[in-house]
Image 1: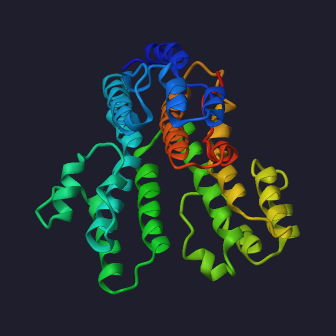
Image 2: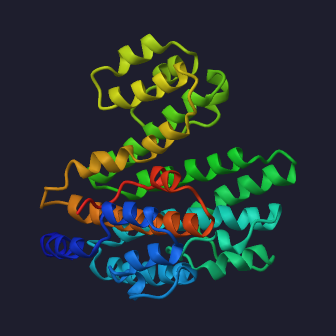
Length: 321
């Protein structure tokens, strides 16, 4: 597929994305139904109207439409494989948790490259045709459960490492690999800030980032001045400063982790005026993924009675309009 044509297409599709201001307005509404109406005014999931109780169905329809678009206009199979991989790794992890820890099928995301029925077959003890890049981390997680060594963090780290290893092997576009590097580095900084010591942090680090273990050791070991010095003239200077300031002030690191989660997306948005290469399509895909996350954050939050400021705080970086 010709990228020049696809990039023109995604630029025209951006005007149908839900802007950040709409999610902020939705968080302010009195009821979940009012919030849902604002969202479906953008025909999210093909809806116009309806009630908040329909939001998961709308999300599924929106994902299906988006997935069909990617399959049709993806420049190559590696691109579409990479886009759908996050859902596959999430669903593989959820399947193991269902089998061993009583997790629910509601924890599945929409189908990626692998249909959810395949993972349900695995949970039911039937033969399941699961590719090696997913079955290998599943086996590692199984071993933890069978040896009574499983914790939520240990299992998540197995799948996170496997996901990024797969992505760095699959993705060949420079802009996308840079995006993945930003994601890994932000996650590793979060881990280092939270860990009591370097050995504990090292057990959770993900490979593929640019920030060296020497720097992460300073962060986890409380050598703040050294860490700041190493990262002062890098793209991570402001990010690490925010994290170290929060830790020094004994503030919760939850807010920093939300910032870190959006770091890669913010860096990608800096390239939003580019019209060539893979960036416009990659940006659209991330806009759409975060739009779906924000719909779930807002509507589930409103249905659960969450405070409006808490909902706003949890919103992911999305299309600004």
